[in-house]
Length: 566
Image (cartoon, rainbow, N blue to C red; front, side):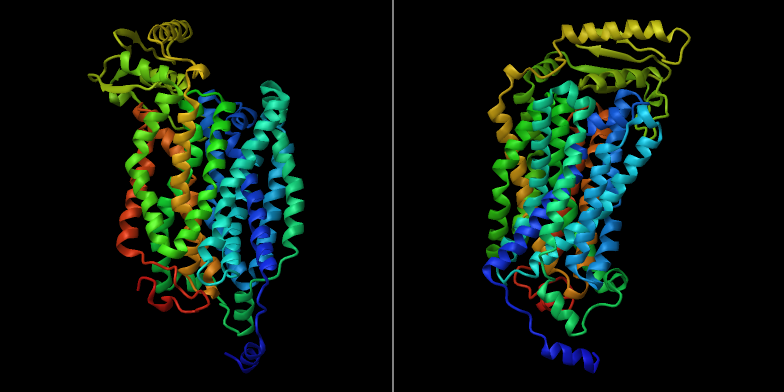
């Protein structure tokens, strides 16, 4: 350390914040992050409508897959945003970095609201949309780490879990706010107007939220721990190198990813996104009812972020996170089967009384996953599976002899499939569609979930349980990640494993799960992805990740007070 830096450090004494100032730090950081999550998750809540608006050149089934991929594009770049903005946060400061990220997020979201669709500007529409999603992902990659670090560095020892748990509520509150605004607009305008143009209103509202967020955050000061570190000349000159090119810290980054955030992410996205897709796309619950039920579960479950965050200060972060992972892996399949039973009992009854089977030569079947919407799936096997997936009908696969035709069996009824590229495809297609529809109707496969038959209290209860799992794994994670890394590289080091876990393992969950379901036919098979990831994280976490809740976060050593793995 230079003489000048030492002198500056000797004379510097960070001011202790009053209780009122501390509350402002938590409120300002949390509110801005709520708005940023609101912006980010509007797209996910409106994926089906956006698919029609911006990918209308593709078939209806491909529109939804393409919309999910565009949704995932924002997740794909989150780790890059974490590295880029994390470095700036460790070099310049926490406050100014997340001011920049919220500006990028808010403006990108507003532009989505005024962006013309495919019908008006053609291919430019999806290209611009995906570009805006990439900007949103970059911004969110820098936002979360900054907000969590900023709040944790203001928190007194023994209360970091309680303080940072307010940041942990923001993702859920942002999703809840997006659902609330969407439901309000849909109710006022009606479904037809909302899907035609009213869906843009929630995006344009983000401009107002952006103004409020920036105004509030401009009132904040820099983190006192960061200020002291800068004054003492201890800040990192190369946070990327220290974080990822030196094995002692890189090892902790990898443990944070595979022993904590990967499993936390899939539990989070299963409980708050996959459930919505499962209700609307598989169980055919109307969007308004599904959104209301999920919003209710989020409202009832959100206080438990604060409960488990505070509890982690007393009993530790690790036991709470590991409990959430174990419960999720053990109970996802029965919970989702129960959702089918209570949300669409007619589908469950039809599947039991008249199971659907696709009998085909395995070699003639394709993986119907087309990210660019240009492939043609025309074989009889592909035609049969696409028809069933489009109707939300679960089915089993049965291998048929090589070269044999493809058949759909609905109970005892057999419907031969056809080659969609054949010379008489149009007439054969019409006959096939009529026969399949008649057979499914006769077997009482529902076209949509019957609201009168739905047990809404039980559906709400099951969704609430899934949200509770989210609060278990997510409430302590910010404090634990902050405590795993020294101040000089904390922003960079904690942001990357968090955003790889949540951006990649979690963000790609919906398209991966749907691709698995489309290939297997079993509507629950997509759950194997979050279950397997949860189990892997549980094992690594139990064996190799140590408790951190008593760590001194002002330390600038890697294995702080011996609390971390060495």
